[in-house]
Image: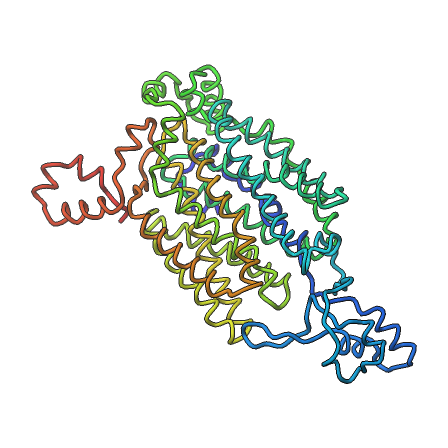
Length: 546
């Protein structure tokens, strides 16, 4: 892949892309582990007493007869009739002689105990998170993303203060350790607590890796670097289906996910701090060592750190003032809505019907296809128009999946996977676009503040799914589509940053013009040759991708 798309990249840049690819593979296991460990199999009230009664009467096909006389039928919002998952006929009244053929006079009560179909063991089956306890399932899911949100708040400032490499390594190993510990919890309280701690380290290394790549790789190849990073995540996504099929017990799935962290110990020596951060932080000797290493691996003459020092101006504002500045940008809203859409579609995988392992496989294929869509789109149309195009496609996919729900499972899966394709592309565009809009000293903090907003989307997503299952899914689908369309409109106010050097100060970041202004100026200059020749610098500052 790097040979095909990486023409002109140095050996060190290609090496970094490969390391970023490998580092991102386990991230999908952590981000979407709830699909495996919190899987809800088909279930209904236990009919053990009725079954024993039927066997005592020597009834043939006793199990199905016990189901028929013990479990009432219910109708959903689409008119489909099926056995109740949480209700049963009063067993005492059945035995008292009210008859097995006519249950009209038998009262209906909540399940006294549950029966789960299939060989899977999950948190849901072990802690009985269904029916009156079903609200605990989205709570546990959200707890993982609450941990991620706290991790983002902590890691952003730590990364800007202590460097990209220490935070990358620390949170990588943090995630693996607490994921392994999560497999040993014995009750709901400890599961909730350890899940939050595991979430703190989840996906932090992925985000730091994106910033490392942005600060080391040349502007021309930044999209390719992120292409490799998200491809690693997608390969991990692809591996989830066979891994979950092999590990049917949720505890062993977590133990496997945590144990593979041993493979990433060599990253202590393989990953370098970014010269850009070292120079801005005043660590010129350390920066020179990294530059010498790059030159040695590239078989090139080393760059003098003094030359780079002169090209990096001082940062005039502190971290807090810069954060106040970023809060005025609509990118935070776009990040939150994109994340909400992503998690709603990804975490709803088990509710699509059909084989859940195949659905997981289809979703991973859509994720991989989205990477090629992302790379092709931003290479041709730039960041802003690509986001607008894919987000509009996402909005129509979300509302369309509801409208075709009465046509059959196949149509729902097709439109859901189309939405998954679009939302994964918007997610990728945001990840590569966001660091390009803000200055070096606070770039990582701002990226993590945006991730905090996205984690809010992850926290809300399980409850949106739960509301869709327990009530009307039309309202949730319509709301989601509307929010996505709003973000596509807000995105026109962000700057197009294709092939533009990263801004070093807040002044440089603020000088970037919004996409709509660039479009207007581009049209003006293209149709006014005299103005274009008179102000060539201004024309260059508002250029858009061809």
